[in-house]
Length: 207
Image (tube, rainbow, N blue to C red; front, side):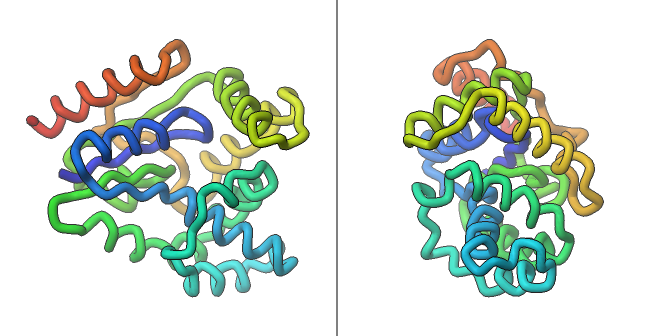
């Protein structure tokens, strides 16, 4: 079974993807980590403004070395949003994502273009969303919990900027697939959101 989950930043799609992967015993790929890893390397090398270099970094990315704990900072999130808007970077990571999705037995992938570009043939597609204010509050608590100095206002501004960049880019913009089910998590707790997501996946996949 192949499950595609899309949505804007801090909507809860990653949490739901991980929970669904555990439930169905499927491998999971947070595709956002790929772009965060590229963005992080661009930052370290001072190459964030260099589109050619960012594509080269994407092509040479070692997915086995990805460490989610070091890639969740606000600066890296912003860098990821920048490089993700570049067609050459997206093209460099496309086949890697499709190979992951093609595993025997299926997989769960979450990101911005899974149901529309990476896995248009997915058995179940979810588009997870929430209001910008709620998403900013979630991200603010996450960053605050890691000791990062920030403010709710700054996080909300960043969320809105990323939404505009993700939805407005020319290459694989964030858009809901025509056959995806919308799951608004604005007023839902984690367990409520998971129960709703599980019910939708089971219904869509006929399981």
